[in-house]
Amino acid sequence: MLPTQKLSRSRTRKRRAHHALRPVNVVDCPRCNSPKLPHAACDNCGYVRPGLSLEIQKEE
Ligand SMILES: [Zn+2]
Image (cartoon, rainbow, N blue to C red; front, top):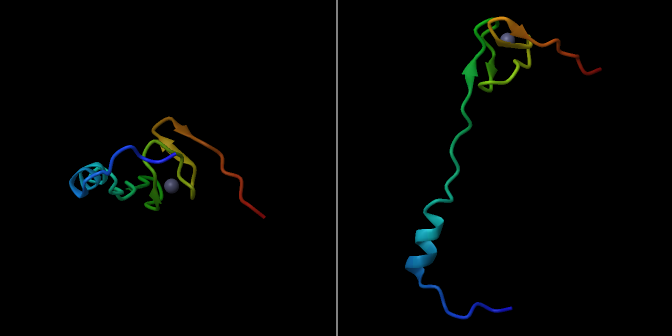
């Protein structure tokens, strides 16, 4: 299949204007201060939010 019409540079660039990647948001764990993703358990200590923390299994 081929495109029926050539896309102008302008149309191509307008489409790609939305393709930029945004940096991943990282927050500091309030319990151990290591970087973690928001709304996710901390890799280091398993903290999620006050009243909830998960046990972490260490890989061996
Ligand atoms: Zn932590």
